[in-house]
Length: 275
Ligand code: PXL
Image (cartoon, rainbow, N blue to C red; front, side):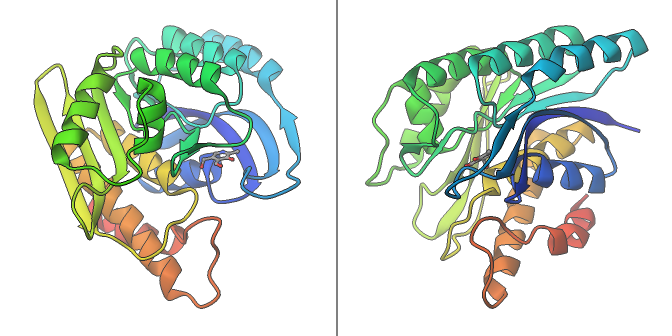
């Protein structure tokens, strides 16, 4: 059985981070080990969320795993809350990454804005972590912040996407993937540049009329699962885009639907049909 480890927070309500990645990767038939970085009552888009830091648990968890000789096909980091947690993610790569692909989702911003609690210094440090990964999957906001570029609020085309991907791989990462992008009106999807093989990979679905939190985490978890199953990059991107789009479609179809996360749960049979 394939095994991956994911390091991110537990937002108890919010359908993001571990509560999205864990069920999805497990449903893909992959054993999913967890390094929880913090417990929050909700994700940080809610007012008044509680926060309990778990940083001090992380090194002891890794020490125990090393004694047990655990190995993984993939290591996937999502939302990280501090410089110390980024250093621990690097440690995770060093200690468990020799036979594993590494995927960093630099979850820290969207729609031209950083999430609550992050600043430019954190963005720079996250860009260093990205430089050490095999794959990264920022959205356009995260990419712009990491590259010190203006967020293209008025839109962008395929040439801009390709230029940005090349600049991202200059951070040191082998394959950069931009997610949630719309270089053409009416389409949303992802585009990747594999700098080792000098190849481009993209997939788009119809753009949906609403946007939701947590879709980036869902997308990244699905990509991680696809890669762990040995799918090609093209196939892993296609599955992640289709599953995310279907989860959004199901959410919108529900009357009085959530806005804080998407209905990925009822799209899981569809995800399995794509494998
Ligand atoms: O979905 C990204 C994410 C993950 N974890 C926490 C968040 C967010 C986005 O706001 O607040 C705690």
